[in-house]
Length: 101
Image (tube, rainbow, N blue to C red):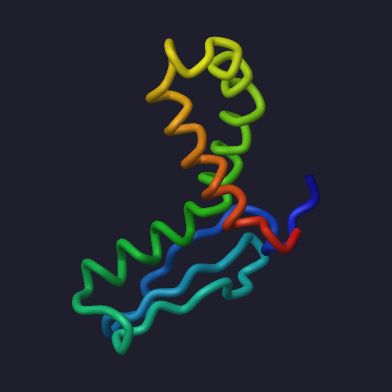
C-alpha cells in the first residue's frame, strides 16, 4: 500500500534546551517536540522516540494483520476471543494512522 506519510526511517535528535526533533533519512524534519509542549526532558525524549518509531510500528501492525490475523479469524471467537480483541485494536490503530490514504 502506498503511504502518504514521510517515507523512510525516522530518527530522534536532541537539539538542546529540552527540545527534540524527528527527522527522516534526507534530514528533513518530520516533527518538533519543544519544551513548551512537555513537562520534562524525559517526556520530550520519549515522545520523540515514539514518533520516530511510528513508521516501523505501522509496518509491524500491518504485517500482523496480513500474516497472523487470518489464523485467529479461522479459529473463531470461542477459541481466540482475546486475540481477536487485540487484532481489532491493531486494525483500529492502522485505520487511524492511514484513514486518508
